[in-house]
Length: 238
Image 1 (spheres, one colour):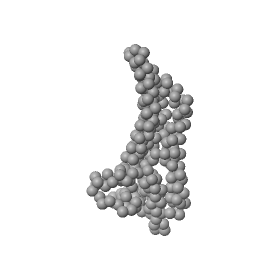
Image 2 (image 1 turned 45 degrees about the vertical axis):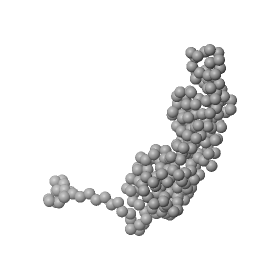
Image 3 (image 1 turned 90 degrees about the horizontal axis):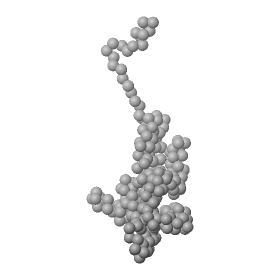
Image 4 (image 1 turned 60 degrees about the vertical axis):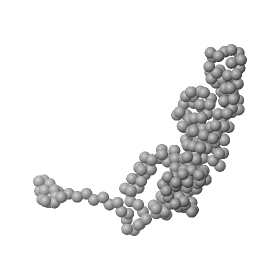
């Protein structure tokens, strides 16, 4: 037994070594090793919340919902969790065509080993860039070129994806604030009417917001506000 143990131990003076092979096999030069695939997957999962916020319709939707809740004066109703969940589900519906195109043209061929890793990334990036360009203003994109002092791009292919994502987020904030302003107007008019009535009745000690909130809720329910708001937001991305 001692002899077997002695044979199992490394020779005297030898140093144990650990080798990690990150290269792909020689038979498939375009195939990335499993370790790199795992690292890439973990990286994508770690930055997934930022990708959802920056590169999808989530930003515009959650901004409009926040304006709607403030205009109605309902405080924390609906709760943040409800609004965020609804915004996520709407984002999935709106981004479904883009996601399906990425799956059909990049992810599925790569999983079936019909595409190399680099080619799959390029094909996955193309539908996303088309979506970003569709909803990004050139004015917002030029701001970042002015900041970085880079030459103006001649074609869409010359625009870096990172810069395009930043410009897209500014455009979405602008659009969200515009829609939020339009949502605010009917509730603001109702607040002014209630304030004028209370002032004419001499009830100056009663907060107008407290009196107008039931009327705003009644108005929102009567016109089926959630259906109209959801349809308007979804159609704004068509």
